[in-house]
Amino acid sequence: MTELTLVATTISLVLTAQETHASHVFEDYARVTQVTPQYEQVNLPHKECFSEYVPEPAGRHGSLAGPLIGGIAGGVLVRK
Image 1 (tube, rainbow, N blue to C red):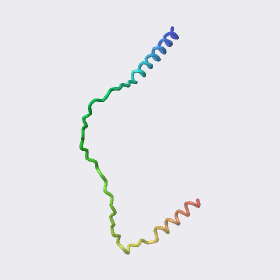
Image 2: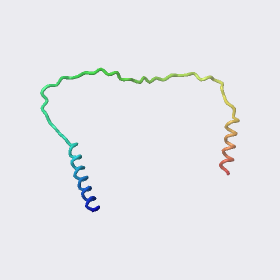
Image 3: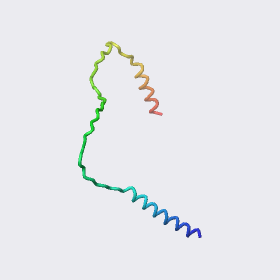
Image 4: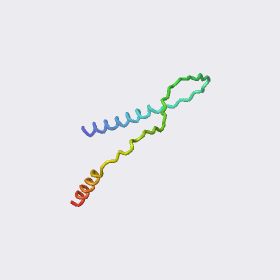
């Protein structure tokens, strides 16, 4: 009894799936007799690219303490 139910259910699902798949395919052709153009005004954003030069203050040099301490710490960590 259960095998018969399983077979019947499988067959009905297969047939339903084929009908559903076939219903999505539709093609139709017609002759165009008149065309009226429709115009729409659309605002498109645009990007403007330019170079801006910002003066950098002269005479601002950092100390060498940071790079020296970082180099020593990196060397110690790599050795371990």
